[in-house]
Length: 96
Image (cartoon, rainbow, N blue to C red):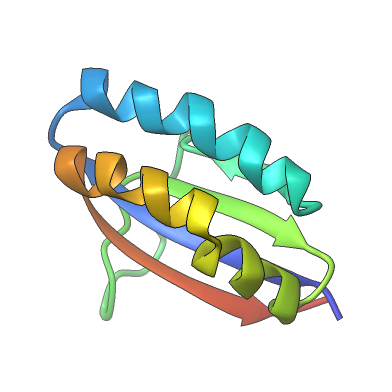
């Protein structure tokens, strides 16, 4: 079953965040990840529990692969760049 890594990001330092983006995308693709959404225009319809700001959605073959990507040494090495330049909420969810 497909799984999705969904990350909402509030950029504090967009210039620094670019260094993360250029490294994260090819790495996700090495794990079979396909970017479906990457910070595009958004209309929030409901926000009782969450007020998203900049959403990224990456589809993986399954949750195990999504978690292998996130937990990989390579991703963990670049994740601090994102955390230095943005506040984030992220999760992996199974779907269709």
